[in-house]
Length: 274
Image 1: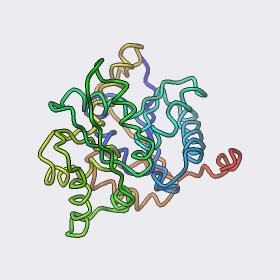
Image 2: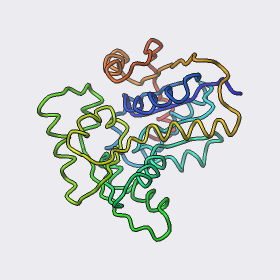
Image 3: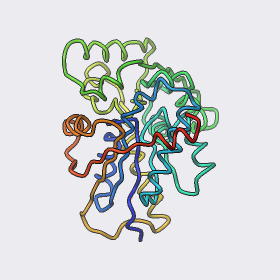
């Protein structure tokens, strides 16, 4: 039994696609959410910048008594997960491995598309993980496409209009081969999953649920589940404009957003040479 909170972070509101699933699977836990809106978007940063940002955020979450940390950002998972695991003595889970495993489970023709940020696509985060997790001698084709702006558009309050819908339509229709499975490889994207479904008829993989199930399994294995009953709570920390964060988040979740705090990690980043 361990009643300390689960730590979760992202470059902003994207982590709600994971937090929503975590609360569904683990409704008795406390959560500490860190939205780094002050340094958004992550998809346009370098690996070194992302490592420094993530290190400072994990430090912050540990200081806030997190018992496990979820990197609820695909870009940060690619750039920093292994680095974070090397330097911190705490369980840290990313979202790419769960998404890759689920895509391999549901695909029938072994042709998988990945919609992500440009960073995740260029660094082949999902391709590498899928190749690692596939069955021996399983022939898999992975097609990766990155969007420069979509995550940022969602972060700043996605509007259902013709222009934004066209962005998603163009994104999905880049996949010219007959993929049967599409991974939403940015945690912001499942927040507008309905539009992806409009233009893609195959399997759509949202890594959030598989990530949540992985967290539950690990905590149960280590006897670290909370013994509270249906008393979830979330404490939010953001690095810019908590009012804007709250206004956008309220359209993305049914979770309570009443404990929100603005914080700065600039001094810590400065000491890291950011």
